[in-house]
Length: 248
Image: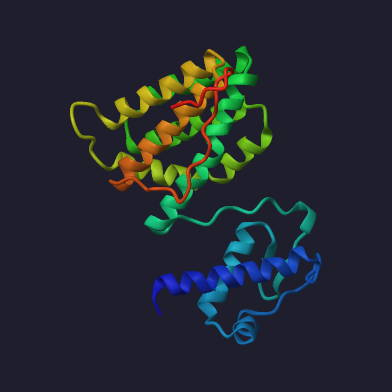
């Protein structure tokens, strides 16, 4: 069995078991079936069942007791679902597609709603990133900048979504850091200059420009990672200026 097929089966089983908890079919305190019983019930191997159960434990959905089995925890206390790990090029493309759909609007909202405290935090995140010296720091500090933009929007849904995407975003950023940039500019110089345009637009409270700066930054980041442009299936209506002119 290929690793990809195994992952898909594990993902499917995880979703099935989690729905049983969320629907109340497995209520708090329920002792769930053993690995062997679940493997027989869903016609999968025990390693696949084990992977699904590990994810449920990581999510705080179930807890295992030695010699007793696994039990459902308080459903109300279960945290939000996490996005699955990036495993291939298609996942990278999907992640950037999703980020382009939320981070550009978050940047535009930040330009409209930010206050001086937000601007100071965003500027500090930008400066901290510009001083990163290794791939590990590059990814974490780059994410810190994007999270600061989301928080400046004063819409907690943006920052919460960014936090849920933390591992996927940092994974992509670290991959970018592994590839040398063409020309005289390093990857740090390129990203820093793109971040600077975002900060400038938000500082000026220019929402269309902030949207465009974030759009260009994410598009270029995707191109640097993939080595080619991922052509979208459709083109979203770009933001307009107060005079109704479409941003180019």
